[in-house]
Structure formats: structure tokens, C-alpha cells
Length: 105
Image (cartoon, rainbow, N blue to C red; front, top):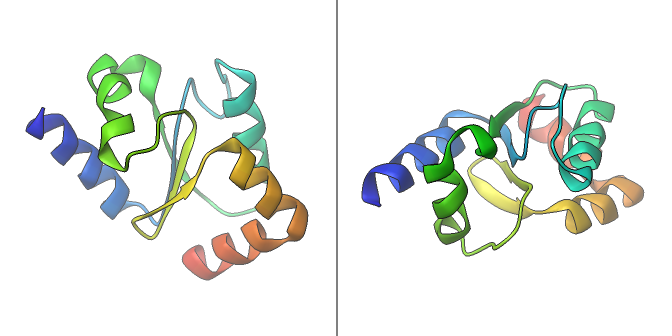
């Protein structure tokens, strides 16, 4: 399990903005992932993604990484921001745009 947690940690630390989601931003595999990716796209900045369905080891262990049980999971500058519900609140208030702008520039 340590190897997979190290791999997850590398993705989180090597990307300013990364979303772990079911599917891809172009072809999401669940509604929450779709809406979360759309919110990030609306910020107009590049972001990384990881398709957890394509890697069952990550799918099974990501909830342990930051003690967050659901997908999608958004990380900015190495910190867990949260899932769809938190992203939606931040998007509606404008805080998601500010956070992404500050992280990506």
C-alpha cells in the first residue's frame, strides 16, 4: 500500500491543481466528476487530472491518502480542497476562481 500512496503523493505534489476523478474531463464517468471538471474548466486555467477508474489501486487507496472517502477530490498546491460539494460552494462564491488563479497564476 505504501507504493500506491507514494504514487498519489507524487501526483499531488507535482501538480499545482489536480483532480482525482472518475473518468477524464473530456469523458467523465459520473455526474459529480463531470460537474467538478466543468467548474475547473470554467476557471480558464490548466489543471491536471487522474482517472481513478483506470487505476484500481489508486481508486481503492485514495480515500486513505487524505482521509476523504468520495470522488472527485481536488488538490491545490498539495492540499486537499475537497470534493464536489465544497467545490460547488467555492465556485458559486468566487473562491474557487481565486484559489485557482493564485495557484496557477
